[in-house]
Length: 424
Image 1 (cartoon, one colour):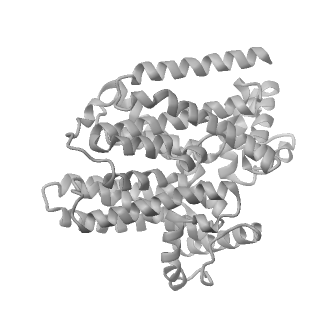
Image 2 (cartoon, rainbow, N blue to C red):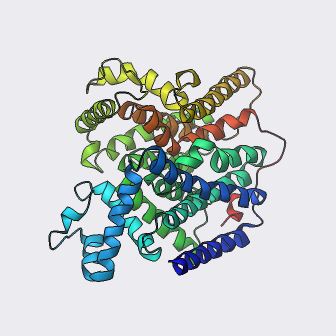
Image 3 (cartoon, rainbow, N blue to C red):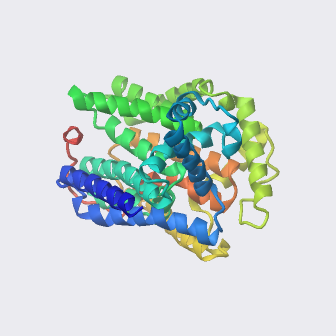
């Protein structure tokens, strides 16, 4: 057992050192070790909270318990292991040994975890370090890309993706968000480098395609938003680059809406009627499952367009700023509340700066695309997951982008933008 610890710690230390050597000249290199340490500790803290505060309740330990079962199958019957991994085929009544075989997205997470269970000899905490490191890798690459492209706001990028407390916590350890954030941030950083030449370019293309597959498997609705945004953004940027920004934004929105409608065909649950029914059903389950928990009180939410539209304003505000600090009833909720209060104050300050024309928006198309991503996720996740505890976790998919935009009103200087193609 000690040998397993030593070997895995050495491997993690090797990965950390290799990344630092490669990244030591990046704009945010001074934050590397501090941000990484916080990220790794956040993953451990998440496990400790679920173990001692929630008394082992929660998906994180259920995921890993199934991963342990898979790892044992790998040791005893490797052929069966690969049949389960690639074909989802179970033999000898193995189905009863797992918790998530009837939940494809959850069991896909188990499949991702199983190699880490194997190499760590079924150690939850070591496996947590690997997932936290992967999530950090994505956040680090995207934060540095933003810092290099928009150096006037590099501090905002560092805080948003490396130090924002709720984001760091809920994108670390053994949860889906660690995988999601790692894949999402790395893919975005590769896409906006616009450099796909040679062998490195092929690796980037492969990883982007692989990430699309991973995100589709664990949180398919993200793709229904992200892919239309990216498609609309690139088409607008290519064909309307020299047009006025007002024309670009209108073109982007038309293209996005058209592509978004087409995206509803990529998964049965994204069919309009099925989607809104599933959204309201998930809302009701969330409410029933946490009767004593803080949650959003929507106005008689029903699976109809009128009901959804009526509740969108509350969902939007809640998805970005709640729980409010005065709604908190526990220490954790107070921490989230103070962070949300900071976001609210920054929002008012940003609006004030815009009204007084003290913010010069130099990249309106990219800003519009990012805002569409933030607003849609904030609304949809609030409607489907009104429990503030769940919502604080799900917000990790968009909240750093929101904070980064708000940081424009605070962190700004006269530095010129860098060459995005120099990042690799």
